[in-house]
Image 1 (cartoon, helix red, strand yellow):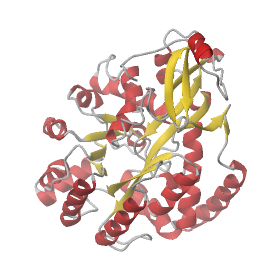
Image 2 (tube, one colour; image 1 turned 90 degrees about the vertical axis):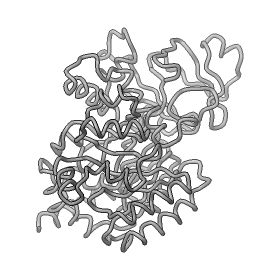
Image 3 (cartoon, rainbow, N blue to C red; image 1 turned 135 degrees about the vertical axis):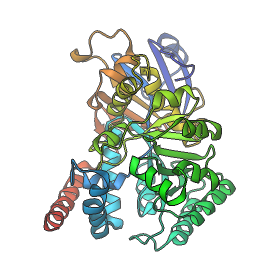
Length: 427
């Protein structure tokens, strides 16, 4: 990813400890280094681990629960009642681990999570040594985790302090959305995030209804309201952003806030289309997220890249828009930038953490290979991800997960599904 559009053929990547210490031609590597372990991946593309910049990991346990419904009906009639009944520490632990297993198998090595019991999510991620940004939720109303905005923020600050020096967990503020958080806590979040040098992630301009309701209630579009409250800054990650006009884009560009694009979730919920080509041309950093498995149904960032590239072309009526390299940037270095981690991850560079994946381009359905970068975006799928390293430690070797007991996890998930399905049918 650095320099841009760089593809190195017949090269070796050398890892020592948690970091990349060299990238050099294979024949030079063999002469220069005596390796404890060598992986010969001659038909593979080796690239930075993918970064899923927005999701709700534990909602993997709601995958397929209520499909083909509008956003508010989906939330009000199915998801929120299910969350009220089932979400607890055990639910979050199992749902998060299920998501981690799926993400590693599809090439993700760092992900952002916004969900209840973020303390449990952080614990599970730490135990399984995967990199994560934990966005602790903030809402005006009570849930299983906290009672009010002050309670959410107090618990979140405790979590931030607990993981301040973590190798794997970065804690961020996660106000849910402008329509679920009032002005006072949003102002408080803006102040605290600046003091702590923390990121903020929020669902924003997700639907036309949200924008219209904001105009009717406040006289402002949601983005302008956040700007007036002091939230619009390089620390802000704006998720979805399907309903944008030129004034919104100008505000984003001026503030250097980030956009997290979730194309498949937006398609499935008929929320609209983010004008990614316009955003990129305005100099705005656009990262990529899957959203939760309840509104996407998978956490496959390779698939999300292809969808983002294809939609970007259709929305802009320009076949050259959101090209393969831009799509791959959105899933790697741009995600790192949005989290303030671009000096550590997001590209294969000497001195950076060894968060790396290998994608096999040797199968018959990938032949011939004229441009490996193009193939990664347009011609591969998650089952071609064969290896994954996080901080130099192998997490998947020839499709086999090394840190997760999938047999017992699958059995726990099956028991959750039986209970959840029965309760949803009773409603």
